[in-house]
Length: 107
Image (cartoon, rainbow, N blue to C red; front, side, top):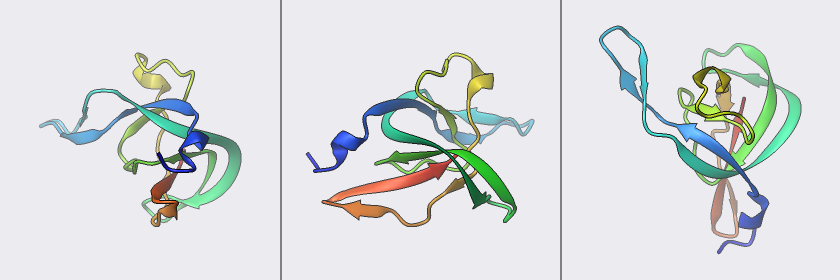
């Protein structure tokens, strides 16, 4: 086990974006639980369009989360689609710590 894996002491729910249907609606895969660390803080980030937005949460995981994926923070009701959070930005480079890759995602 990597030295820093104990820092991922919370669990979020993730549904990966799969594709779009004929009407342009998003199709997502099954919900999975991911270990994470959540930091509640305001940070100015650039979204995929290059616009500046204020994120309210930074999530650190050992799995990259995509821009179109759906995320439910620890304590959110994953059965309620409207309580999912939008991914604003994903750090391009992963921090490599003791053989473990860590990714930052901003909501």
